[in-house]
Image (cartoon, rainbow, N blue to C red; front, top):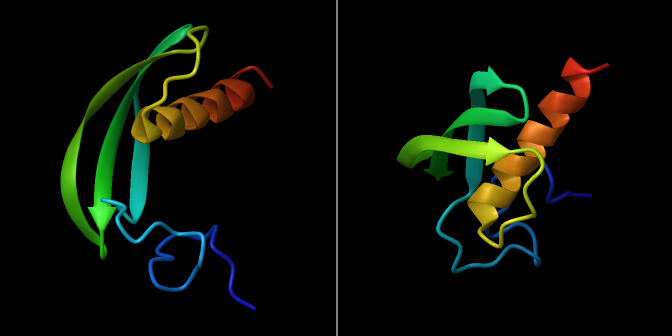
Length: 85
């Protein structure tokens, strides 16, 4: 049985949108300023980088509709949870 959640599910998972720009987002913490985190990202397709950049995520801000920012916010929340035990 195959699962969609490990990444690179294009063509393998019926839930994966074929028109999606990316197969995966990669995140790295660049700076921790308390409730504001700087997150480096790489957008990948077929294991190759498409673009990269830096996002500022406010842990107290409402959820953004942009999928990249949503995933970065989830990464930031996970990091924050580990940071505070």
